[in-house]
Length: 282
Image (cartoon, rainbow, N blue to C red; front, side, top):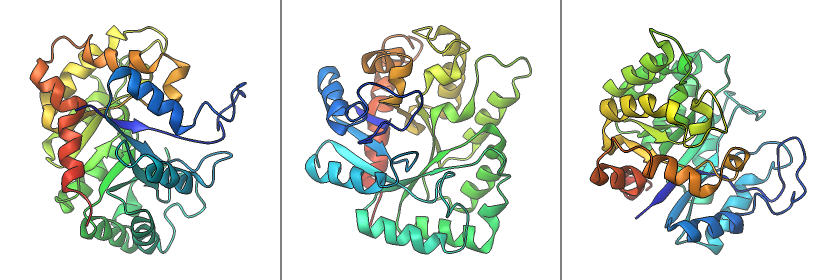
């Protein structure tokens, strides 16, 4: 089984510059078409209530209702672009959202300037206590500056699976002593931290240079530190179309990361996430 850990679906294209297929490029049916062509069984919809899509949680819920065997919703809860970001009442909003959409996980994008203090505030602690009580997967978009406080948080809440987006902020172009990568690898010491093997174009020094060979030393290091049981492949569709096709996003990992044994690739392509999803939710 192959499960895509990181996709989006929007009825209106949220990014600039405008695209000619504004009302169809981000539709869930486009994603399902690509999944069918490439033998991908299921996908997690990472909700993002960004420009022109304040109703993205509701749209994703409609998609899951229509395609319940193919799509899983991780709702946007107080992400960085929302007015409620790190404001009072976060735990109540999380509980309401989880119950409304019957969630197994949620997504939370952090602001770059955030230093992580909110995690340890009274409101932040209640938020993650609720995450643990509801057995939710916390899908976190972060920079490497967030790793240290998130390690502390993950240690405090060992039953919460933390799933970091896009190789957790590692960059192929950084120079020795590789401070960004060191933060990512240090987080491997915390057993409930997981990483999405997605965003090859974000990690690479050249965003169009498929198969992104300059990222392979990063992928190898993450694999060697985390092992297949804490890694999950993701496409970042449809945003990935800015750099490559859906098939390329799959084969950049499956075909070109030749240093990973086939059995471990199968875990990363779906086994690990299937286990997390099976154990998640009330």
